[in-house]
Length: 397
Image (cartoon, rainbow, N blue to C red; front, top):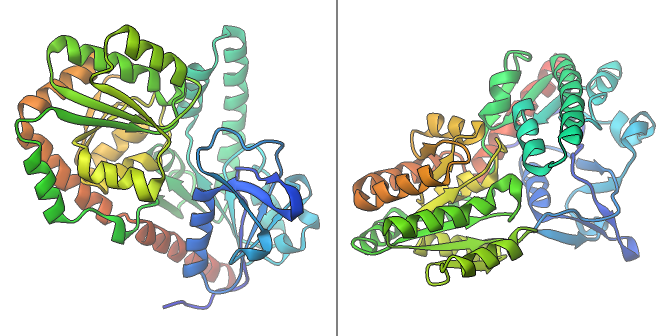
């Protein structure tokens, strides 16, 4: 049941939109799905102000929309001129993003008497890990880390002043709950309750893997930040250990050509398959639910990826590098296996152990499903909107 709250909900994302012909704009499907879920739970209008960009970046789910056809208002804006935006001034609650383009939003909103809630994803440690993964030039790496540390101080100051903060994953929650008493922890996902694998279906899949090669999977961008290149090293180690397996790698990115060459050079064509980008609902989720035993996650940084919960919702446990996001998820959920960062051999050794002892995999599969069921797309956004409504009511009480 919707409870009346004051004024519209205004969302300021960190991602950008690409202006296109006939008034259309290019934007990620995942973001649109999130805003539509806000619309379903919020009482009153929802507006998105978004900055423009020249290109779509490297997101795999970009689409084009006509703003007038959306169930919410969306328009291009300059975040340096928000005080001139009527939609900003009339907002009941502002959902801002912790990023360098929005560190000023909290104080600007406070001056206008509007509660502002920041959404956080990347800790300073994660930002520096991303820089390490993507920057080869040591001088440029130092310069970028210096900038990241300056931004982190400004971000912390903004969150201290804000009416609240919503933290995607434990890395930023562990930091910012000490800076803002009105903090909420959530785990981002796009899996709805209807998409969860059924327990009977999970039992059938687990029974079918007995005595068979492990079916391994990775899905995501094939880039250094996601550790995609280490997947081939893990496969090479598994083959050398004599572990029967099949590894399917879904996604695309700048590492794909090199990975393809390595698969051929190391004689892995019979056990490693690059499947390309699969449609999330029609292809990827069914494949994970029916044909996957373990997910390999070589993420080199603590990005609170949707991949974690989406995989767990299929009853598939994860073996992953001990980045701070996955480490926090394992501690919170009680399932999954951590291996040292950048250690492909350690990951292969863990997979070999699981291959020999399938019972621990079965237990982790059901534990993963249980945690995902408590953190579905609908449940997560319902908690987030309840948090926002409480802040809105406090602002006028």
